[in-house]
Length: 207
Image 1 (cartoon, helix red, strand yellow):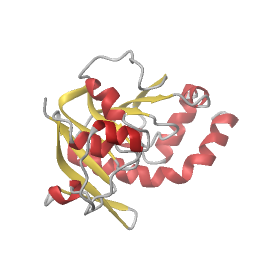
Image 2 (cartoon, rainbow, N blue to C red):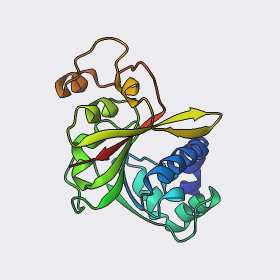
Image 3 (cartoon, one colour):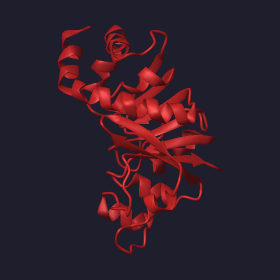
């Protein structure tokens, strides 16, 4: 592993175990094999669970990190990943058109990266899944997108995640009466507080 890779990873590594648990729970439910992760920064924990991941990030430090293939493999295997995983990296703003085929991924990841679903749903297969959290509003955006239906939420307890499929309406019911629109979400730049909160949400693309 390059010294620069190790330095960057040491600054980020504390997030790794929690993300592994999150992706493991999502992977167990979705059975996804391919994942697109826009706004990933250094979060290679997805590769512990999913055999092929395409990471997308515009941070200037990420190309050097992801180009260290032996270093990335060392990190992923060290977190419990299988040695045969594959990954690609695109140094790009995910809001720009990406050199990817439409409908070519089983899972789209949207964690703390803005409105990923707005820009990248085209790359998700019909029947595939969007994994999102409420931080930057992408859950709320997906909730009003006719292409998506909420099929599960992931609740965190003692560093583990539990998939819940019952009483899902409450997880999309705002605490305060709110008319959710795309314009409102863009203006707010943050998520909606719901009657029941979850660590992450799983939507299925239905059309």
